[in-house]
Image (cartoon, rainbow, N blue to C red; front, side):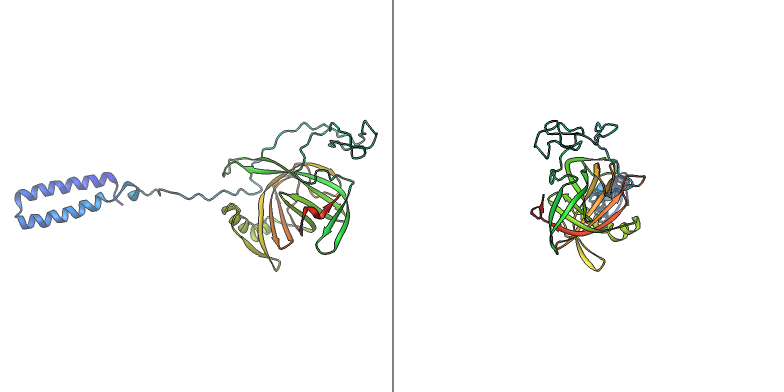
Length: 301
């Protein structure tokens, strides 16, 4: 393509040619030459700098979706004691209390917790050692005992980009290891009772789930994205990133400091959850969970 500078040079040549033709050419030939020169000049003048440039005017930049291994996460520093006491007593009634307890579950006294942790949005009063009843979608009412509890913090990016850190949104959620074996998870306005799990590899995630998560992300999580996995059709529900800020009790599959991304998918009341963790000892093994999505009213304690 001709540059703007070259176009002006061509116009100058044409002008000289027309002036010379006016002096030496007969009128009929001059008119023909003038018509040709006018056509060439009009073609050059109609070409804008944007059209002649090799740089596109608008470049579509696909939202960056950093992998679990490369995302930069910034978490708030919390003043955690070097040793967490396990023999705390309520000053009013002497009952055993947890380091993060804000009230005594026996007498109801308000306490000053040793660990000042944020409260999860849902199920904040469900603690290790308590009994919980869940209405199972297939078997009806089931009784469980809480063995362990995890505090999740939701993460987000202020804007797309590999150099933009992931930071807490301010929303906290809870997960519970139950006996008999199950995992109860609260996330956003959804509740999951998960009963089976198996480990995944990065190859599994990249092949079976990442393409659909990327498609879902590009629609700002508004498109209906479906995929087939293990002879079932699944629909994307939610994707995002989280960190574990506190663990309490036993039977937990994650540990404090774990950082990962998640994929939630559903099929009616069936639930499929993927946990994909950062490498380098971030406290978690890539895992696929299966179970059910239940209602908050199905959980009683």
